[in-house]
Image (cartoon, rainbow over all chains, first blue to last red; front, side):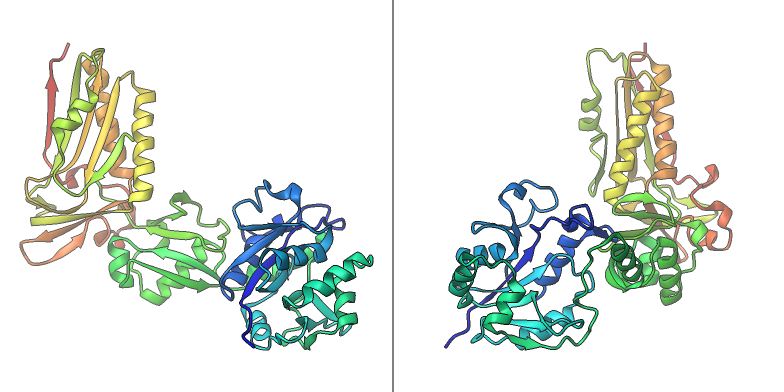
Length: 276
Length: 166
């Protein structure tokens, strides 16, 4: 039996009552939760879609991504069923958008242990050992049972997995599946992720290009400001210019040295100029 | 866009035509040339390098500022990048206006700001075989020169053209 391909589905249709705002739009280092989840999934499967309600298709946080619009009622089951209906031959890596600690390693582990013969492959919760349906791979074979479940008034994907069984995996990193439901949890996640290394793009010009031996690079850094980044790179490449002789640009605009850097920012250190 | 880069020779004739308008009574231009001597060193050629994305935005802002500050009609600046030889034109500024006074002022303003604000760098090659990034090598030891090229270190002769002044 050949295994169906896996596509990604980011669930971003829910309304967050406890956060009192759109969870998908919460930001970490300038990147929305939705974008983070989308990019994470994109590193592991070939196609990723955002699951939305019909009234969200023009929403700015969601609109620039490929979408699958709910066509089967409300809630996560509706999202999963709509995806299974849109591409009936695909299995779906279904992710809630509010899992800020979710890592490449956790997805890799899940995908490697996928059991295509089960309705789903899912992690168990570190808290209660029950299946986590919103960081799971849902198989095409689950479509019919999901439809029946929903027709019988069911709306909880976790209860569905408990009733119908799934291939269950213990999480390697117990924090990976922690979600963010309250403003306090959000603050904690911001503080934690602020310290995590992030990817930046650096371009070098003139003397700095020669001293760095390259004109650009993408690197992982724990520096959170251009000042910290310069300190790190000056130590690595032995730049002869001190920071007070330089200016700095972030995303092609002059910037403060103390500005908070965001994931994917492009940084250029500007040595003393000599145009004209 | 009122500021741009070119990798080839600056076409001053077509740039000048862009400034022409029947309300302008004249135009002033400035050309920066590659000179053979800088701070006592014999220069044989040089290279200009630019962070073009930012420099074009900032260059455009400089020209827009000039158009706001001085009652001139049009203004344009073109900067060359790449390898240049002695006598090559590195930069061109042109301003057209009703009267000449403000055209001179705006032209001067633009070239001064361009030299100080745009992320453009110049590497000189010397007769001695040495080479160096202007304002970067020496100022590593003398930071007060950062971002402020002294007047005597200017790297070109000035040529000012005035046509049909009123």
